[in-house]
Every structure is written in C-alpha cells, then in structure tokens.
Length: 324
Ligand SMILES: Cc1cc2nc3c(=O)[nH]c(=O)nc-3n(C[C@H](O)[C@H](O)[C@H](O)COP(=O)(O)O)c2cc1C
Image (tube, rainbow, N blue to C red; front, side, top):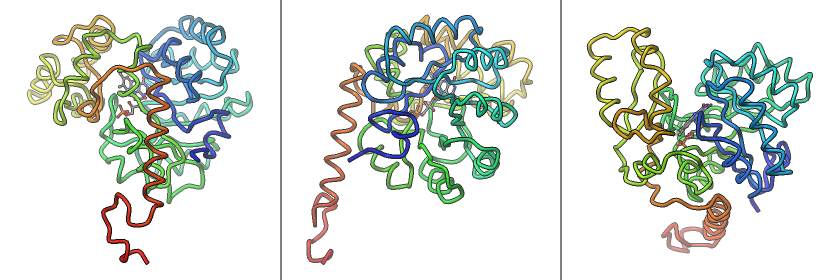
C-alpha cells in the first residue's frame, strides 16, 4: 500500500529515508535501515574522505541493499568526499547545507542519483532545472541546520512547484507523520532524530537519553545571526551560544567553537558542553528501538491510519451521514 515512486527510484521496500547525519549515521545505522527496507545513508559530515571510503566498504559487507552518502557541502573535505563517492559508485547522494548545483552534472554522468535537501521553493526549482532526481523538502522543526519555514508549509509548496518526487523531512517520527507527509503530496519521508534513538545508532547513550527526556519546547536554534542556524537541545553550551549572539559575536568566533562541540555532544555524550543536535519531534520520542521494529511499526501504523480514514465516519469523528 505504501509503495511510491521513491521506492522505485531508490530500489527500496518502504519510502523511509534515514537522514545522513554527521558523526552518528555510520554504517551500523545505515545498514540496519537498508536491511529493514528503508534507505540508509552514511553521513559524511566533516569526516575525511578515507573515513567515508572505509564506511562505504563496510556497508557492502553489512548489506546487499541500496544505500547512499550524505555530503555536507560546508565540510572542508566536500570535494574529496565527492571524488570518493564517484569512485565507489554509490546508489545515491543527498546533500545538506548548501546548493550542490555545480556538482550535479558529474554525479549524473556517473549514474548516481542526486537528492538535495531544500528549504525553499526557489532552490527546489533551480535544482530541478539542473537535473536532480528528487528533492527533500525540510522544515525548520528538524534537527541540524534549519531554515525558516515549517514542514507543513514548505512540503506542499515545493510539491506544487516541481514535477520531481518530493520527500518530506522535519518533525516526522511515526506513522502519523508519514501519512501526513503523503497527504501533503510527498512521496516519502526522511527522519533524523527518530533514528538517533535506535539501538543500532552509535550516538552516546547520554545524548539519546536527553532526546528521550526532551519535551515539546526543549530545542533551540543557535547560530542564526552568523548564518549557521543549528537546532539542538537546550543546554549550557546552547545558552552560551545564544548569549554570544546577543552580544554580537562574529562568525569567526563561532567557527572557533565549531565542530568539536558536535562530536563532544553526539559521541562523547557531554550533555552540557557538547552540542545535542535534535529536532522538535524529540518531545514525542520516548524509547530506543531496533531499526527494523521502528520502521515496521511506522509502516503498520500508517497503514492502519489510511485504512481508518478510508472507513466511512471513522476516526475522523464524523457523523457517517456527513460523508454521504
Ligand atoms: C544529529 C543530527 C545530525 C545531522 N547531520 C546532518 C548532516 O550532516 N547533513 C544533512 O544533510 N543533514 C543532517 N541532519 C538532518 C537530517 O539528515 C534530517 O534531515 C533531519 O534530522 C530531519 O528532521 P528530524 O530530525 O525532525 O527527523 C542531521 C540531523 C541530526 C538530528
């Protein structure tokens, strides 16, 4: 029932894509997602190209299913990682934090599917003209780098503006979110925060616990004033960042603080002085589950919702007579 064009494009069973998250989307998580019928992605983040090549090769031992690599365009290694991805001939790349326009022809020649993350209609249309294969429309609820528009608002606008299949991201963590995304015209979903709280994700247990303890308003966006807005769970570090911004800190001061803090939060589990990247949906996540259980639970919940919506006068709470 939930087979979409995204399943055909990527050769997967379910239209569920795992966000290519820096540091935590390693071959452990990505292979579990691909083996469970979704699309697993290695998050190259700011890792050097040798690490990315080793992870791709590990993936090939862990799964015979399709998988991809996320390229963070602001990484100092982005160009070298692209070279590795081309040499290793991965199935697809997603790109984050920027406009991948210049690299698209090279990927196309190599037969690699390109699926950029967009947060605006203008960028979506520009990338469609250059020739990408699909788009991930991401709302500001998401974990990681965020823009200004919500998922509910950006997804249908991108869907209306392009012919390409659109994947919805930001604030999705269960079957209700999947059905909502499909209702908005998306052909699949990408989830990040939910997959952090999976058994297979190598993220530090203390960071996972912070996601589980999070409530609806536990996240904040730091770095907006310096052009690198990052959504994370509020802690000592994020409060300090926000104070620095108020005091007019420059981009360079933030760069100095930079990436080490992300590693400290996600991998070392420093819950006060590390950056705890997570989306607003953290407030709804209450457990750590194996990826297979998680994906199958989302699919069966989505199918049950669709079936109930099809049933006249069902859970919509309508009087059956109103529908006739
Ligand atoms: C810990 C973490 C790290 C992330 N790192 C990246 C990244 O390196 N590149 C990228 O394109 N997106 C990154 N994202 C965004 C995810 O790929 C995904 O689009 C997003 O998490 C979806 O929103 P959600 O968190 O509400 O599910 C990251 C998200 C999280 C939670």
